[in-house]
Length: 243
Image 1: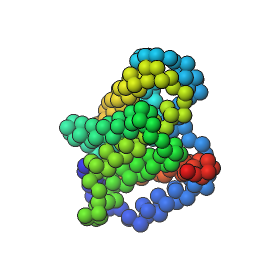
Image 2 (image 1 turned 120 degrees about the vertical axis):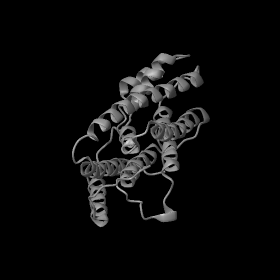
Image 3 (image 1 turned 135 degrees about the horizontal axis):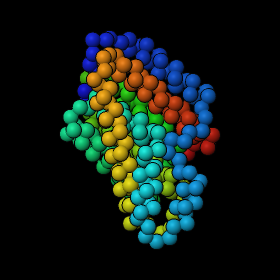
Image 4 (image 1 turned 90 degrees about the horizontal axis):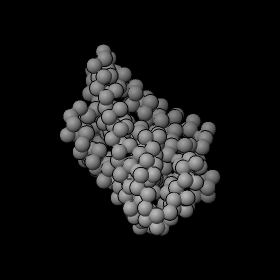
């Protein structure tokens, strides 16, 4: 993936100071986050379902992705500088494989993790992608993680986050496998809708004068948003008593 390449130079220390300041602020004033929680209405509906119900779970999966702030922000970071369809397909496919494995594995396989800790990691995934986009890892040499595998790894975290939300509900065992597959397909459909919207806007934005400089500021804001999510969920993790 190409990081930001422009005639505008940046002060790395200034970026780090800004990011750390954002982290400190959100840790001090963290509020409950609604990044991808299941609404009470949807929760009651899910718990009322018994047996094979592909359409409701398909819809809920799509809605969960479209309204999931953390997922949308991460996808924005992933495709921000991708111009070729094949590149978008590769990165999104790796992300999809990652979150599908842990979503289905978590719900069907019984793998459990602290939801607040997982959501904090998801917040960091947004920070990572935005920092990568502004060239933050450019001089890391051999220590720099291949961005494709980083996206796949964070996909595992995003899928675990989805699984923790479903695990908190009393989902009927009857038709569970088929319903979870339907939910996962819904997540993928929602992801496609989000990507169409994001990529379309980015293609229009790239035609504007000063896009390169604006893109730098946009990714700094994206990184700050990731720190806010991280702070909110870290605060909730501490309040919950940790592990």
